[in-house]
Image 1 (tube, rainbow, N blue to C red):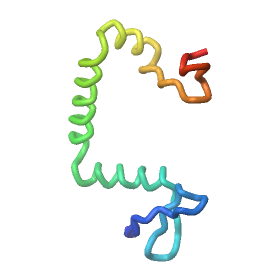
Image 2: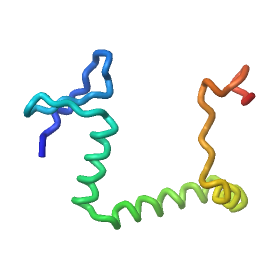
Image 3: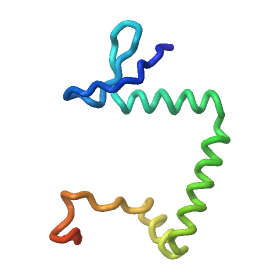
Image 4: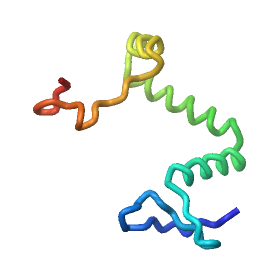
Length: 93
């Protein structure tokens, strides 16, 4: 396994992290995937199950059961609007 230097390039390709061995580089998404696999190896599946349960408790605290049922029928909670999808004064179009 390669050791990551941990320094993100400040030039145009900000998503690239360089290895100390071999001068290979990977994208930020690939580094995240590898980090997730390492977390799975270290802590096991139950770690992710517990994190999901905690996340569901927070969602249940902030949103009603009716909202959660509606999102479930749609396949999940809708994403928040990005700047490109907003009209004047931050209102949706």
